[in-house]
Image (tube, rainbow, N blue to C red; front, side, top):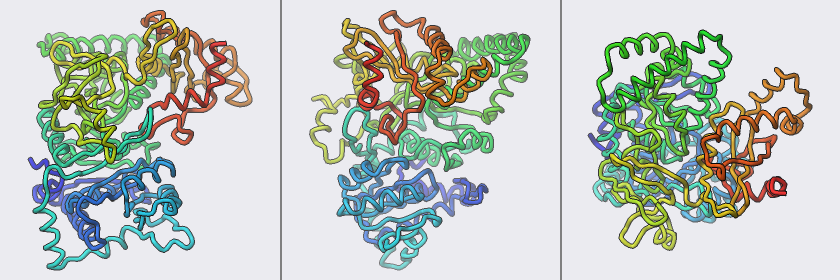
Length: 600
């Protein structure tokens, strides 16, 4: 296996040639395939064009685009000539784009669609280093008077196939060193200023190799659906791993179409965040609740059998009794296969899941249904994965066992410390932040608290920066409550409040479609969502749901009061990061009046 990003595509093209490497939907909504040979050719052309445009060794270039094949082409072209890729989130604001472009001294930004072009074009006046915008989508309309932006095809037209260019390509290839920067991934900044995580080629090479050792169930017969932003280290690392393994990568351009795309693509592997599976769980629970009594009983019996086979036996590497095996085969045919087909994952192999807490209830449910969730934990600073489930031996309630060669120990305040070949070089142009991120003996401070259980399973207990203490001196881990409430069909988003307060409260965004349906069934009249969330019957419904969900939490951890909002938290208002994590300080500021009212 070739794990080096700068050589991997060429090696795979020689092996697979005309076999499909990528698939995507074009402007007409039709699926288009790109073979390995075509992929390699596109990368080489763009690499030669980059040289012609004067992109230097270890120069930072930016991509600012929804998921597109072109963004992968730019990535690997940059690696071929020793340039550094700085990906920006496609939904990122003007302020975020300006900050990153200025700090990373970027001259060239590759943009995907109209929003990204418009944003970067506005940024040109405040970013003195920015010289040119290269546009992937030919439908993008350039601003009047714009003489510096060009389309991707025009950028590539400058590619030279001459002895001089051949020589320069060879020089760049021969001068590569493992410590070269490959990318700078800017953190989403939940608690402060965004920092650029410097990941080297050695980091990525180690990540590819260690995942290859751990994920032995994956092969070039798999199909992966790429739908999280490629800016996110989870999707970026996973997609690179898929290419390393020869797995076909199907690119979903529009995140809002993911549920339909899954049914079209039928992926066997796919990385995702817990929210995807929370919605699956809620949808199934709704269908069960609406079913007739006998069908509900059948499903509950199937779940019981699935749990005994998949979790009690297979997870613990125990032999499955013959009778249980026969029962599971029956229920798999009658129930589970239909469920997996309805989602679009009837050919499922594994589904890596990380980025936020996943409740044990949903985790067990999915495994019982024969959906192999590989729940894990990682950070941008660790080139994604620190730990993850395997097919067997995993511990529900944990985030799996650490990867080979990745060391974990528990430091002060139960902080998880990490050391290994996938740990970042540091934060770009932030020596003080880099020094603060490591212990004196070189362990990376994750900012997360946890413990190591028997069998080296890692258990997360809380995000240290999110942890707060009530005025009664009780520590609260808000993410645990938020993850539990996320199981409910009527609750979409939750922000738990209580730092230095006498009790815990929450700001809740309902699942509006489910709430409207409930209102229609109960003949609850309203003119706008503002009226609906204030309705006493709706308030009572949510209160009952919260009470049931938090029953197993300690009394001091439980939510005593809540406020329902008529609109969702969003990135545009700054309440969410680009990875959809809560910005608690922003929420506390924006909803100060509502919060104070809950403590009046």
